[in-house]
Length: 252
Image (cartoon, rainbow, N blue to C red; front, side, top):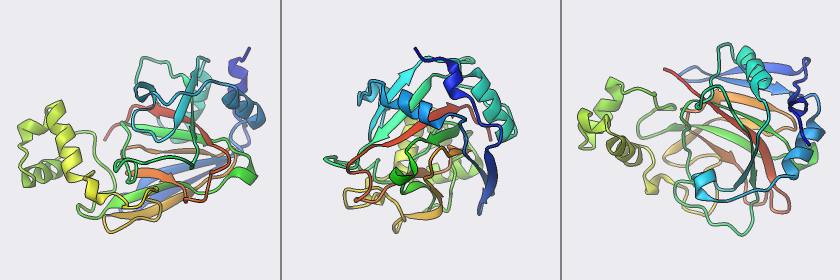
């Protein structure tokens, strides 16, 4: 029976902060993050994983969840980030693990280019050192010059929508906003043509910063920044790329 003690943070973890140009977005790294990383890995490996779209959405792998008290963990993450981090559902956030194996898979056009999350994203890489490679890429959308999509409707987003035949009124509807995102940023032709991740970018996506995957490394960044797994075709073929993922509310 697992308890929240498995999520105990190492008080001596090594924290560094990077700034992503040109928009100056913050990227926080904390190495040696968990006090007991081997226990976290044991927990993650012992759970049931599903590829159900209802659980993973467009994530190109599988996920597992377990209910543990994440309140102390979130308090620590908030302190490191420099502002309160709030889960999307009340004050509770489950423990979520993600797994990708780079074999016998077919990526959709939306998985072969960057994406955004709804707010602040935090994750911890769980593989041991000998099984760490690649990482996470942060990108700029070349056609618009943007590296981040604001949460609210800005004059720039309205202008981009109008250029593609979408009115400001349409952008304020759920369907209209989804059409805007897929028309302006995530067009199928913007994806990598081959069946692999965007990695070092292409004519439509510029790699701004690659977060190197390291064991027991925490990463926190603005999930509205375009990002993607950075995984070469020859990586993670014989074992899974494992990480813990947390999503928090964001703001502009």
